[in-house]
Length: 136
Image 1: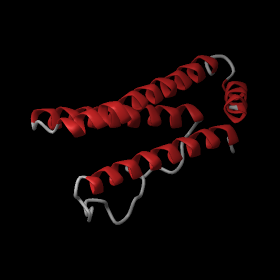
Image 2: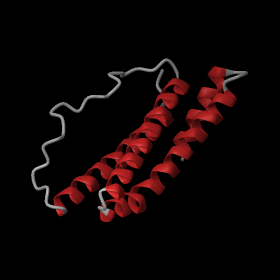
Image 3: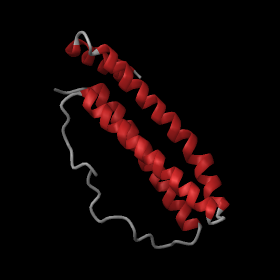
């Protein structure tokens, strides 16, 4: 079943994540890493998953992935601080961490909202939730 609101939300999120990736690549180039060679040749989904059983399932996976990204950013910040590369630690903290946490909180909010709505009328809840996302 098509969910245009959920699709709009996830396409917007994907666009934002691409911008973050480009900012990180620009930063690496600015720091002297002209040839970034650590990117995989095939950028397929880490989970190899292309379909979800429900909007709640998709949001649940997105929340899990956001938490993993947050932990990875924190580890990089900690590593850079220990290595006394405070410039990277400050850049990540200022430019990424606040936005990461804000996005994660919003995603958890969407998940909790839909979870609460689906307890009584799941089909109606999914439809209403999708229309709300489409309107944003």
